[in-house]
Image (cartoon, rainbow, N blue to C red; front, side, top):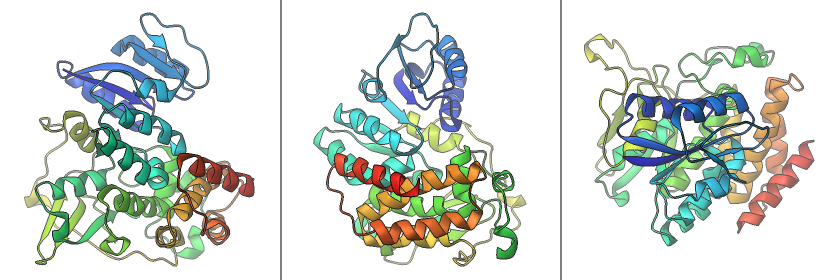
Length: 366
């Protein structure tokens, strides 16, 4: 039985991880749960899964048998076999580092932590005999394609994008779109922040940066393809021009299950694909004029780690403003461009540097 800690247990990824635990109770023991402010939902989870520890950032609950810890870092450091970090934003970086410092494998479902601190995370993992298991569907797919392969044999990696809720909309209509419409993703059921990022395609830019940090490849070795069906999640092209592709029904239960069971696999965790009924699989390039956020993220990747931190932090602020109807759709990309110009040459060498730049960017935008 594998002992697991779930940080962000009341969010989309956390709830799906607990669904796997519910379905396979003999395989997992939940020893820790954490939430930001959904106190009632966390209390229900504690009642059901009976963890030894929990953390609630904002609010109070009355539960029996579980000890409240003082921070995400403390919870990430308890004795367990795996920490799943599904915390939103840069808040996931410190607990991710805490788990890795403790020698615990980290199932990483937090893009921003890897984007802003990927080098620090790998350094910490190697120094303490730990590892990072990707949970994003695209990175989990790349990870599976790379099993048994030599990185030196890789010519190019490809991640796919559904295109989000606004994929087929002209620019003149996109600029008027409110958050309610942008949240209507055609394939994936995700949290609000990541769904808006999917609509702007900034999410795909974060994923490119994340892939470069995870697989330690050059920026020129990865590209994005539009793939409306979201069945081919990623592909790796090798020097002999052959490809490996990871293909599955679009369901986040799969990469979560892979991370929880690693190095094994579960059974029938998602629906089966009937290839005889798949009439077409479409691929295309991204229109950077309609979706400039992806191009900005790629520019940040080329500029360096400081630029990646700056645009990632800025996007957190800007998406919140957009969700609150304070700015328009293309105001997000306009502001990201300004942030990249202002902070693109900043250097980050330490954890303190990351959080100092994050604070500076937030102050600039507010």
